[in-house]
Image (cartoon, rainbow, N blue to C red; front, side, top):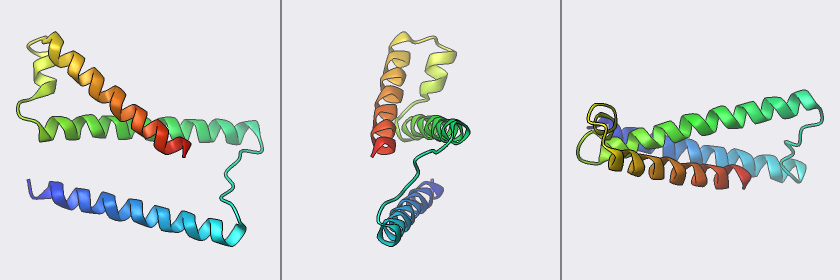
Length: 105
């Protein structure tokens, strides 16, 4: 359990560093330009955002399962608890809405 606060601290520091880097980039060039100029670059950005969004959504679900009592994954898979599956689905949808809002800006 001592790893969890360390991981949260690292996530906070990484987020702060990314915001600082974005602020420096916008201050230098006037705007943070990541507009794709070719179809290949647009597809690359789409793939990058999709993969990162999926990874973050899975990590959010795992963190929720870690911080709540019981084993949600075990309830769904082994005991086939429909109510637990509905709760897990709501959690994943909520996390995905937050991720989408953060990616849009």
